[in-house]
Structures are given as C-alpha cells and as structure tokens.
Image 1 (cartoon, rainbow, N blue to C red):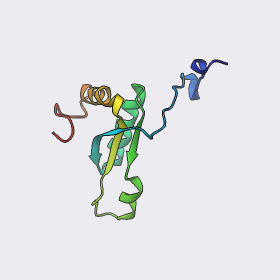
Image 2: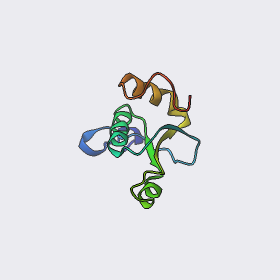
Image 3: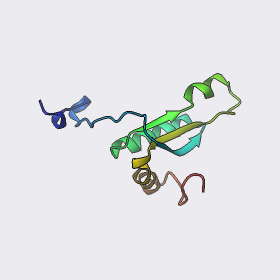
Image 4: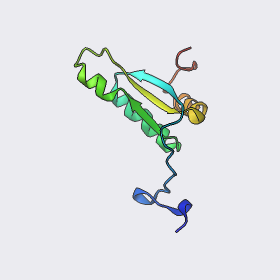
Length: 98
C-alpha cells in the first residue's frame, strides 16, 4: 500500500505528520479554549497541523488566567496559517506581535 493512499477517519485522506522538532511560530496567545479549538479546526480543514502549548501550565495555575495558551504551527506553514485565519475573520490584519 502506497503511503499517499492512506485514509484516516471518515475516509479523509491522511497527511504525513511531521515531527515537532523543527521551528515553530506562534499564531495566537489566549485563555479562550473554545476559540483555540475553533482555530485548530479551521487550520486542520486547511491541511495545517497546529499545536497548543502551555495547556498544562495554564491549568495548574488555577483560575487567575496568568498563563495563556499558545497556538503554534510549523514555521513553514506560518504564512498560510495566518492567511487562513485572517480570511476566516478570526484575526485582525496585523500578524501577532506587531
């Protein structure tokens, strides 16, 4: 069976996963877990793998919301991910950190 013919759940073509050892870029920093989940779904639909960092740290600190979760993508996917979220109306015109 060829690697490019794999099918994931629901018959959707599975993409090859890259190890997270490479450079990552931050897209969003927030405490809104529902919005983070929505952004991950948008990126996933566009074929962009995203990861949420600091999840456990933000849970451990309690309800004071001192540590925000960060949504990150591979550096190679950053421009496309940013454009995807901007096109969906989820980010303003400026890139994060600008």
